[in-house]
Length: 139
Image 1 (cartoon, rainbow, N blue to C red):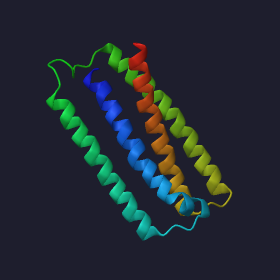
Image 2 (cartoon, rainbow, N blue to C red):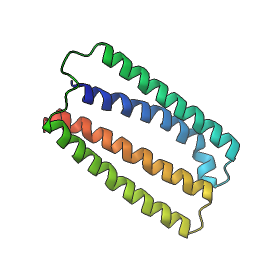
Image 3 (cartoon, helix red, strand yellow):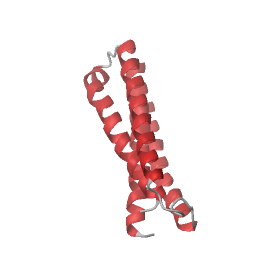
Image 4 (cartoon, helix red, strand yellow):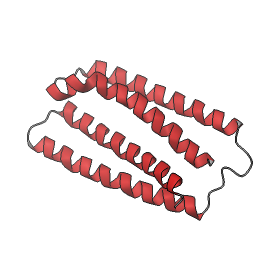
């Protein structure tokens, strides 16, 4: 596995774990539309700090055990990144349009903000998962 492939796996794992916890804790508040801003902000802050810490620690471990030349970017890796970002960008666009639809039918600001955060989460997860699939397919 190249450094870029390991990086995508670490980031995807951290993203799913930490933001999965965030959305699981907020599911009832988000669906009811009655979120408590102070509690939500504190949980989001802890989620972001935890995500950054686990991803940074994972990258440090990978960098320590990395062999020379593992971090070189070639044409194949650039192509994989472009295709994966395309997939994530499509998902983000759909999420933004759906969030606008939610706002048109009367969703609260709290629900709309969390819908946008969820769209960003899903798009990044799709992008990272696409990278891993493309690396495994040896595109």
